[in-house]
Image (cartoon, rainbow, N blue to C red; front, side):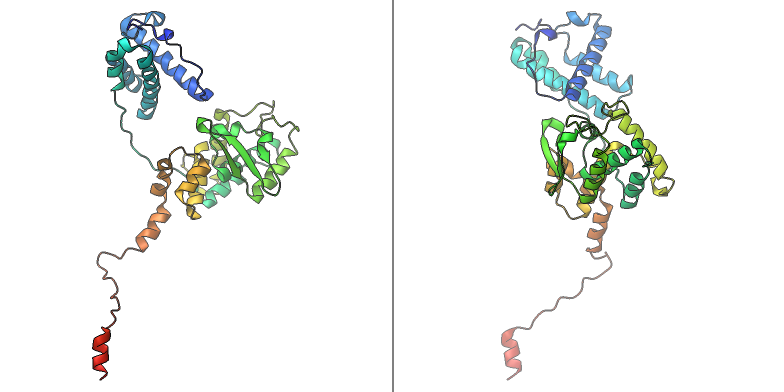
Length: 325
């Protein structure tokens, strides 16, 4: 395939990726083609691989940060989408390998590692107690907050739960499809089962119905969950002052679950399986955020000006025998 090939000619076969990934990739190319048209004067449908060279792609990534105000993380995510396309194009358009290789050498930017934000036990209890359970929406929100903290599900996993995903009985559990289309099963605590049993009695008996519906019966959206978490966090701050000024998001519920497992002595490999992490290294962030664990470690280390206790040294058996003669 010549270098003059158009990007739309590189028909990509069906990919088993999530709708969120597909939407993110489509958005990346919409932004790129709009930028390319402005930079080159060539209509998007007339662009070729030769036009999408390293200078243009580098300029586009810079444009995302300086003009659109995107974070470094967002810039790197857009770059990852473009790398996927150009890696695929390298097999379909070998004549354009020089242009493609230059694009693939564009590095990702290093980002600052920030400590995860999580709720303490009193903060979590205050947040779960914040919704007004005298109303249907309040009972729904309380269960959503409780389930998010107990299971550590991502917000996308919570809103995609269906009634049929629950198995309540002697060994209660729920099934979910997480990031990367990975399926996992999470056991449920007794108090969670009690809340779920009461909630299911208020829902239509349809296995495919959403577990957390709106008033109209449609599933909650990510934005709606974000708003309700923010609203209930503000209410909870009235009875739990430590929540004041704390940025509580749906992902904070997931972090809170991970930290509670860590404090319970669960190893990071098991926590990674529970949360559905593809790489155990991702779970290491909770070790860095755990001040309590660091404090326990510090208590075991002698102070700089403190001499370690003298160790008992048993006398030599032969010397002891001679002393007693």
